[in-house]
Image (cartoon, rainbow, N blue to C red; front, side, top):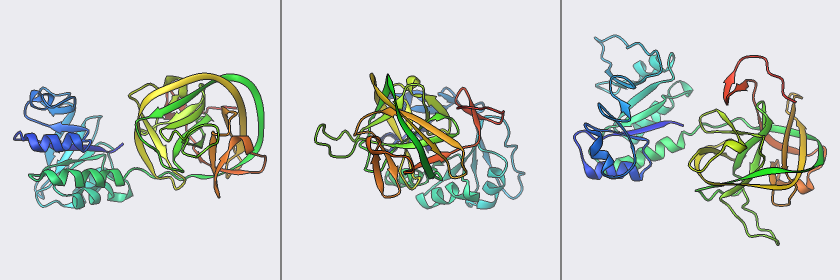
Length: 325
């Protein structure tokens, strides 16, 4: 997800506290011990978790100074004296590691939309602690949107007992939100959270009954994880039917032996897709007219999913030829 950092040099406790409460990913400080006194937070400092000059490079772009070399894995924190957009556009065009120095939420929104791609993150410099929350909201609003498409169900059948994983998040998910899960790394189904009323069990809006333990889960960093690998404290991607995304923290994963269904489908271009889910009324996918319980799913029904072309190697997208069935 997008980096959101706050510069707290010289040290100000109120600014640092506001940053931590707003969910800032890191604080830029003169000494890491200042921030650590307030709690666990990533620091950018000579003695920090991210080391200045090694992990993070600061540069100022002026008309007289050439654009820096945006190469390697180090994050490049770029400032311009009059907050000029053109240098950022040039850097973003060649690097995914540019963090823009901003002073307001408006500047943050602009930087996050540059070239329809946006910078990798923003570093806020301000004397106003209330601006921290506004910039945090601007960053959250720029979470990547996914292009979901219609999958046509080609078959649903019982396949016996197996281990399935429920992912319990630290967030209350809304109706229509869920996680993207699939048997293969080329097609993910939107599996909804348990937000619906049911005569047999109370809603659990923090929970997604995500599927069998072998399945891939799409994460917020674009990588995948097997459901069997997800642990408390991990960040997972939450999406809705419009493709709007956000990140949620995992609080618990419950793996239990349950009866399973294999759902098979075709993507919009006729490629195969599949997912193994628990055979239960409370497990739902999202159709064009709303949620559909897997217990009622039939051949010819349409559900939403995400089709991808790259294969996966240790969770990362790769260009090699990979066939999954």
